[in-house]
Length: 152
Image 1 (cartoon, rainbow, N blue to C red):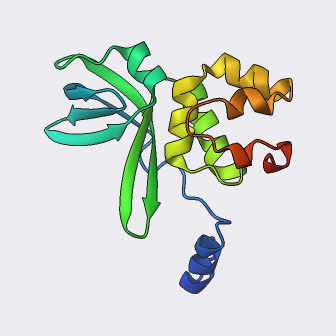
Image 2 (image 1 turned 180 degrees about the vertical axis):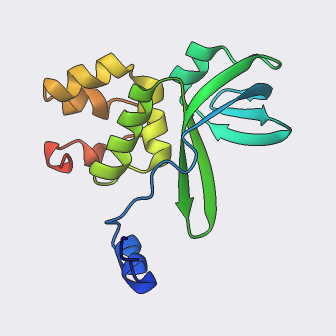
């Protein structure tokens, strides 16, 4: 039997950004109710989920209303909002998580913009090659974040 973590310990962990609850909503499969670049409404058994997607996902899935599709997801929870982000592939979601969890100054909106500007392969090549300037050219990345020291 495992010992429960005291609530105050969990809150301290959360405030420090050291713990992360993963897998709340791992994926959604449903019918596209509404479709806009970077935003979809997905009808899953009568519940409409608003999902923010990078342009790369939008282009890959061609989400026409009435079409059934599956999105890999990440639920971003903050004190005053909850936003569901969706991706065509696990690789896109993994890069999104890498950016928001490991790169100083990158939040979900900037990570979505970067994924919309670079393919997964282009991103990997830039990281492996140390080409931070290639990533920095992606829309949403501030000039002040261009130095390699932001990568942890």
